[in-house]
Amino acid sequence: MPGIAHPPFPDDVPTVPLIVVDYALIKAGDQQEIDRLWKAATELGFWYLKNHGADALAEQMFQMGEETMDLPLEEKMKYEQGDGGMSFGYKYAGANAVDETGAQDVVEFINVSKDDALAWPKQAHRAYPSTVNVRMESTITPFVKKSLEINNTILSVLGDRLGLPKGALGEKHLLEEYSGSETRVIKTPPRPDIPADKATLGAHTDFGSLSFLHNRLGGLQVLPPGADGWKYVKPYPGHAICNIGDALAIFSGGILRSNLHRAVCVRFPLLFLCPHLPTNSTPPKAQNAFTRWSLVFFTRPNFSAVLEPLAEQSEMVRDAAAKAEGKYNTGTTAKDWFARRVKNQRVNNRTAGDGYVLHRPGLANIFVCTGP
Ligand SMILES: O=C(O)CCC(=O)C(=O)O
Ligand SMILES: [Fe+2]
Image 1 (spheres, rainbow, N blue to C red):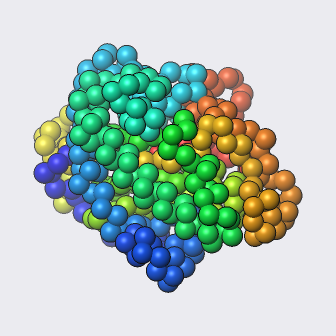
Image 2 (spheres, rainbow, N blue to C red; image 1 turned 90 degrees about the vertical axis):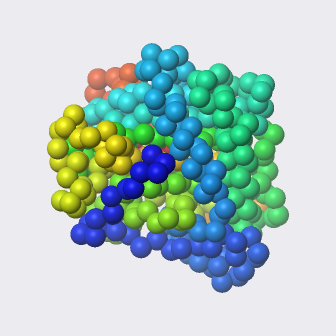
């Protein structure tokens, strides 16, 4: 991917104009910028984040992803996450369902746990492919630390606006506590055979607290509330995409919004014919420009945290939770919630007639999905 020009984003598809938030201003406590973040986090739950300072590390992470995906499948499968509810490790293309029919996803990804990255060279949860190990110290741990710093700053600002005591959200996301927090590099190969309205990564809400996402090639779509259909999120250089996950929606009694999203194959202008040609007739270099790479860091609550509104610590959350009439009282720890969500999306765990419904106790059940 590095050094290969990407085709331009098409200008004839519906896009959603996300609010742009300047991380440097947020960090400096700029009230106007915090107002913009609050608007984005409560209305759509997605925003662009600029001036975050993580781009150089993100590029190195993409390289790690490419090196990993270039390993023989047999090697990658030694580190597969399996069907038992563990997300850390490799996920092969086709392991997850993208809709209620059980159609398989086409993305492969490598997930590295925040706990493993911080414990390195010790192991917290599991072993990884050699391509991950060689870049743990130089690339992955620095990226994880940088992403944690950014997400923790945002969490703290959102906690203040929710009327929570200082550190209340921080306590649910402690560095030293084991959690489902992880970084992920996703590879989507060019698939001209897949219709443009068919998901390559199924519709889902993220199940953690905050996601810090890096896109180069378009394909991400969100379904804004009240919209007539899916809208693309156009990638802009230097702009990460951030979104709220279910855990933060729950902690806030629904004040912060975790929105549905998915990924599809983008159709490019005719000038860039490759996606319309059979895959094997496209020169490899050009084809690589159509391989979609994305990178995420997911901040998720401590495994031991119970997912319920923080109603006792904020009047605002208490009022919102009261209006929601128990909808957000999951009675589940983040560990169990996370394992169930990971498990539910695996094709091998589908049983006849289960409809592949994602059970989000207390929240609306939606067709699922591959993502966290
Ligand atoms: O690939 C993308 O742009 C989105 C990835 C995503 O939503 C996820 O992994 O949860
Ligand atoms: Fe997602």
